[in-house]
Image 1 (cartoon, rainbow, N blue to C red):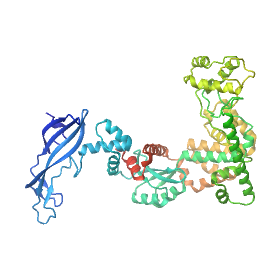
Image 2 (tube, rainbow, N blue to C red):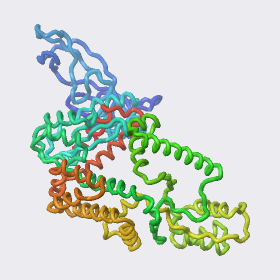
Image 3 (spheres, rainbow, N blue to C red):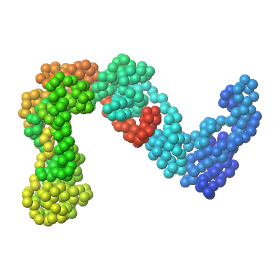
Image 4 (cartoon, rainbow, N blue to C red):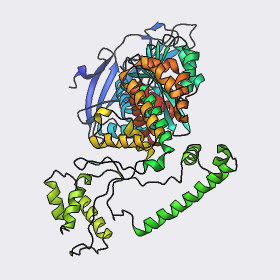
Length: 548
């Protein structure tokens, strides 16, 4: 006999029979209710008089590998309250099943939890494996109907935006930094929306945010007594952008330098190539030259329109280019060339050795692969074969030819420094620089007095942020406001406007670090839902999953 202890509430129902349906491979339980009375759901009066019986068929949690179905006999009662609009009602079993439902409450809870955790289509697949089959639409309805538990008003709130459609529409994620849980997902990043939410949840003492002006305005309107804290990572990111704009004005001088790379570790520069090795086929190289010519013509058109007095908006509307690209082109001293990006390869640390062996006459990919595997190479033979194929192509040799090379190939240093790469290097932690990187930064300082002054100011600010030296902020602002560099003066003016939040960033421990992690989790959920990531469904999954 099926043990009654496995029923969700043995005091409400009594088991009559257990059968195994051989055709459908299901376990069928026949049950009936045991209560002697029922409460009218409309007038809440107790009734003892039974009107009739009827049968409900319900799905329940599986037993071992068999789906379980209930054949539950329930009763209708007379309501003897003359003032009640209902004369007959059906007894309710709130701990077992909801009215009109076709599944038990515990099955519904399990299906909802799986849907919230892994999504619709993947949840349907997982439930099928667990013998709790349902449809995608039903699972999504269960997710939407899952109640979001109320969270207490956070004392420390983290605010950040997330992209619905990158570059077009954005939302806002609010996180309780003390409880490490999201508390709300807003449909936009407007100041009025966040201010309304803050007014509806009084008691917030600290608000950690990025440098967005809309969030600062919302905090002033919705929580004027809260302490605003600018995120330290965003301050360093803004500083890196400023230094990149300064170095962009000296791109030609930077191209005199090369970025050093150690051959004893994987290459950090993805554009590392070898002399004479072109990864592009002749047809691809021809297409690249054609695209470069088209881009150069657009660059000349932009410069010409600017010289004629056109505004950025007018140039953007005419050429179809975004304002960010136009600013970068107009700030450049000459046409900014595109550099083809390539991911670092597992073979990069071993290319100098392979090139040496190639020049010595070893042309067999399998032999080369065996030699570098003894040195620690953990990649596939196909990567070595592709590299050998590039060597043959560079020397004009047909496949399979074993004669000695007519020329010696030598490794080349990576491409010249770009403003962005130079800014990232200069703002790195000095204690982590290698000797060659430290020497490169010193050579950058010697290129131009403006570069030297900009590096001095930006490195001082980065050190001040990392060491939380709030007492040095005023002196740094005075120096930056007297700088000869316009981007640095503009950055200092922005710090002045957001002075209190930046000062707090150097004083308190709170930051937006964990908010960025929650945004990353939100993006994962959004991509997991493919085309069905509607805002209400996304909000349910973000707020309900893994909540205490």
